[in-house]
Amino acid sequence: MRPFVIAALLLLVPAFVVGAPTIGAYFTYTPNQMYYSPQPFEPMTAYIYGHALNCFTSGIEFAVQLPAGVVMTGWSVPEGSLTLGDPINGLAATYFPPLNGFDPGYNLLATVQLMTLPEGACLWYGGMTVNAPLRIVADPRSGAALPRQSCYPDMNLIEVIGLTSIICPEMIATEESSWGAIKSLF
Image (cartoon, rainbow, N blue to C red):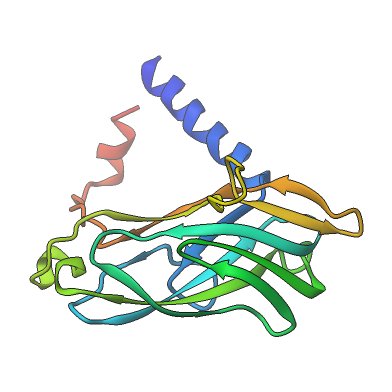
């Protein structure tokens, strides 16, 4: 009974999160890789994407929390945008024309160039980092609890969920099992 309850809960969580608007940092130009394993002094790019924003996004406000040993070396937003602040201390950006949050379902909101210092490099490359979180949080100047977006034409502020990416994810070994061994677990 206990495995069934755990499996049911795990199936419900993604259903709740999938429909909610989110902002995350990805390490590939297409939003699909939320982890990276850098060497010392390695430059890397974090692409900040909004998912399921479900409106024409005219503005966004968020901040990026970096792990120790990772520093920002530059950043940019899409052409036609106006900004206040920067991604580390809090960024408010407007977009013209507004970004279509319906098709294809994600939008590039900003690009942040990062570099790892020797202590920010992964443990297996001689650094001191393992499972370090890179978080998207609310702009500290806004007083909001979560990052927010503004939707055109109403300009209402809507809270979005900030996601966490991992620098130097710990590798987990897997064991090979036969299909019969897997079926015997249930």
